[in-house]
Image 1 (cartoon, chains in turn purple, yellow):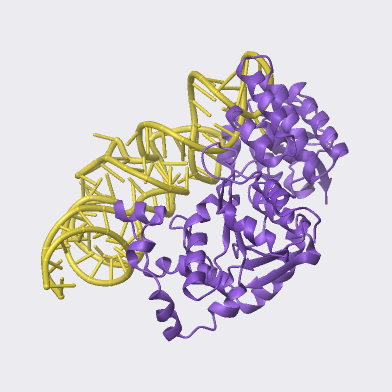
Image 2 (tube, rainbow, N blue to C red):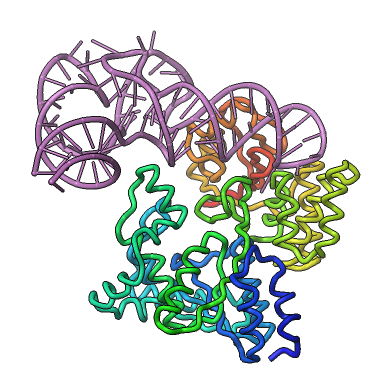
Length: 405
RNA sequence: GGGGAGGUACCCAAGCGGCCAAAGGGGGCUGACUGUAGAUCAGCUGGCGGAAUGCCUUCAGAGGUUCGAAUCCUCUCCUCCCCA
């Protein structure tokens, strides 16, 4: 256990959270002087962590560093039933083999942030799948429809007369039951999990357990600046993204997102962030420079200083002075694709994967987005292909042609 | 069980017999400019085709009416509302 006093621990844990229900309760639990069991529920889909869900994982890591115990709950059972969010598609059912295989993947992925030696991974099918229908009904009797409909996404869908499937109403209960099953002292989650986590408190109280403390972390807006970061929305920065991509994605953030990103995704001291915010507001700081720093900080956090600086240099080269990137992917082109060493340009773009279809390729050409060996080509003509030909689409997609057999 | 309203491209949403590959918005892509892949402005945004008033696929699914259907009819699946 840490030598830190309960108050000092609370002080640390509070940072970067939106709400703790309640701080008094957390303080009391910390004062018990035992390792607390901190629960975090995760989606059962393939784990691809982005810097948004990394926020809550980092909070969990902090608990670990203070000597507490992390329990990751993979919602394989809840995920198997269907879709709780209403928006996304019904999830594909996972076979037991897939679940088994995922167990390893989860450990591997999450150990990038968590301390693997202090992390327990559990699948909720273990207890939820074992329940009899009788037990399910008994569980359901612990709450009321009105209570469940208070959850804002249900309330909203109800008001808008959008479909709400019966089993979706059971989701909060399932998740709450997870807390009962592992006897959680604390449950972490994004602010969108507030209702479910609070339900855990209530259910624990119902069955005679001490109610868990709920710690809520902010949801990070995605690259579009509107929706929350999510891999499926294509607005995410993955923590395993290569440095160049990570740096570039940060640079593409809308300006107003810089401050929240500094706050949630970097270790820059709060006072410094406030100062920067003020400087930006008064025009004393240049937004581009602030964003460069942000991109460096984030890239450094998931890679290292060297990689961050290299990514910055690369970014300046390609987008600032519009020079060639350091590495250009080779694309092998079979000689059988050529006619007398030549090929129609649109075909070449498709063959090299720079365009989705012939029509797409033509579109790009006519819009002036295509260059061969740095020279713009405006017409879809037959072009001479030699080994090493540089094909470019837009500012950031390159391919070096390698002639194969 | 009865009655009513709906299911349109990546998303939202118009269209309600030909002028519909299908308005508009979002998203995406390209260009200009710049402070970056930010902001702004402009263009593009099913596929095949050198091109065409050309061909193919698409308006929940399957049939049908018609010279011609996203648009009309029948059945099926799905959603919402009202009544029971």
